[in-house]
Length: 142
Image (tube, rainbow, N blue to C red; front, side):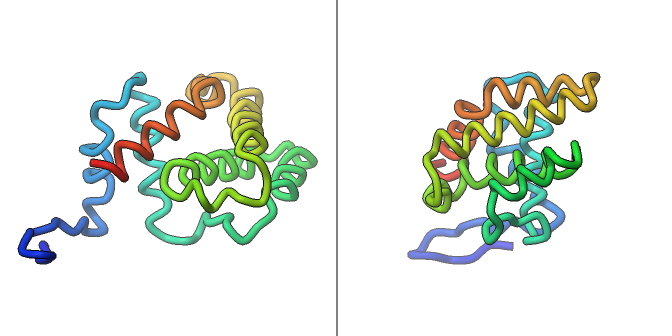
């Protein structure tokens, strides 16, 4: 499906094509294939608002994840912050960027700590800032 805008044809990603759309956009991101596939999954995950944390306190969410040593909560926090930093960085305004970066990195590291065989979470913790920023640059500016 296409729409016409200012005499140019623009593609519209269909719901079933969202993974393909982000895979195509991010095909040249510099990271291993497993990390790239995970990142594509993050962007596809937010085609609905089910995991949206924009109206939640990240501090409270992180505190709850710590109290329960909850893998899913850590993952949701980190993924949300990755997505938000890449696509809507202006929405991260209730604290400093470094605070959000730290929470995301700690959340990914806690995912790794809980399930050590998933090294991808350590990679995401270590590379959160450059990967999320670069993904945003690629998606929004290409």
